Image: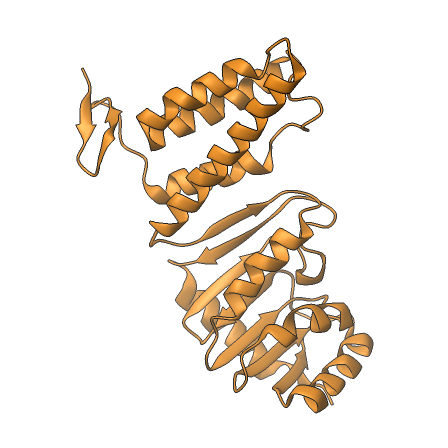
Length: 253
């Protein structure tokens, strides 16, 4: 027995099964996009491809049953005899998965979690750019490997008037000259400190939000898949920890 979801007249669910939240669906579609088989081999009739296509179809069905009918048709066409039909089906699958992703992100109020596939360096840059452009007062980057490449890539995107704090460790010899020149050119207020107690990578926005990066900011998604995850429940503890490390850090000239 099924019943329509009260918020989506096209979505029918089993009343005995718990409904996934938008946040859970978003995390799932991010991971599905990250783990997509190579386009050149997605038509191959192997267990890994069947598993991925089945998982994607289940997600779309959970998101919107009406859309799932069209998605199932695309999945069936992936193995069509004519390559042009199969190619168009793959295009349709990717388009719909991105539609799911963006629809959920527009309607998700919980913590943001973004999965970025290996090599998608622009996607990582663009997601982080959106985060740091939201800073209005204070921005604290924590990463053992902050360097000149990081400075040139991200700091020009910071809004004028924001106090920028960089807590690094290993590459001060390249970071500091870049910061010095950026101060001269942009007028940004940037303070740099070092700490030997750093292991993870975080960015704190206006002392009210925090995001953790699975990779160093300068290398995001270059060498392996990674994530950018908003810290919610543990935010007060994380802010206290890294503000303390900032206070105890060694100022750099």
